[in-house]
Length: 215
Image 1: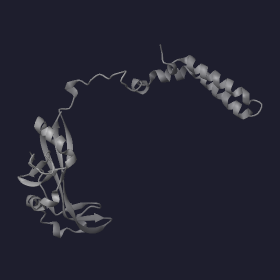
Image 2 (image 1 turned 90 degrees about the vertical axis):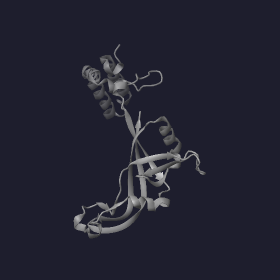
Image 3 (image 1 turned 180 degrees about the horizontal axis):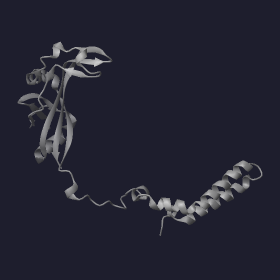
Image 4 (image 1 turned 45 degrees about the horizontal axis):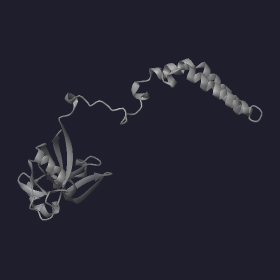
């Protein structure tokens, strides 16, 4: 059986109800009564078109949301992605600044940069860093956290996986699900063009890891 909005009788009944609802206002609010009667007439005369409109809507518009009583079929495994990217912050970088600086390559043109060399809103750092290779080394003997995971970039110890993510990353390591890791290191001296003004500053170092995880 058609759902009610797709049924012409549904709209006719709605029109009749509007007509009946307008009757009590005939004596006291004739203008409001006229509005009800006009709406009723429109619904009755357009009932066929309204039913056809709802019948032609895509199923996704009128289908109720899935619930525990109407389970959705699992996607085809062939369509499922083989991996996903997760992100993790590296903690303790302030204690390893020398190691981080050892990874850096300086921009030899940095000192000569002028505002004319920068686009509005552009920020340029003095130091460039490699994305890897990144090694994650479990450190069960760590006195602060038995789930601690040491982060090495190009052999330099630059910090640890942030405490809240240690157990998860450790499980990924043990399961062999980590396919690749890239490091995004930022910090040091910078120059920027903000509203056509050349500004300078120095940021603390920060490191974010992008971890490619097998599904």
